[in-house]
Image (cartoon, rainbow, N blue to C red; front, side, top):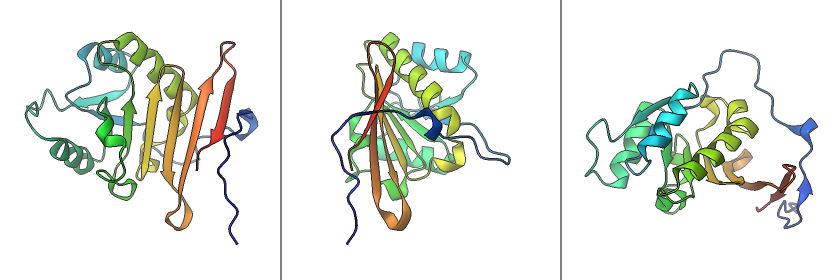
Length: 175
């Protein structure tokens, strides 16, 4: 019988278990921004040295979500979006994605989105090379994030990470 990973108990993140960039040539995360990602957020990401292509620049304003999703897959880039539909595995399954980063912050609050993305990058994304994003989604909010990924034999792992008021990182397994 298989043991369940699911726990709702929060535990302090053990930094000794933090991911390390593996040896070998790996590309840093590169993003394909959906049209709903505000320009100030794109500028902030680019000024931090991240590669960000934009669907808006490529004339995709009126294209449906599926076209944006397919374009990110075709380019091999992680889709950056503020559209919660992309978090739904029913519509955008883990096994078909090149990676999705869903920023669960109102587009009217780009400073909160920037703060959340900065924390996510420092705590997770900079250790997770582009070639590992296939089959992975991240849901970002101001002081935390959730990682959903396909693991061995097609199972799905989902873990939540959150910073408390003293900036200690807590985690729990959701599934």
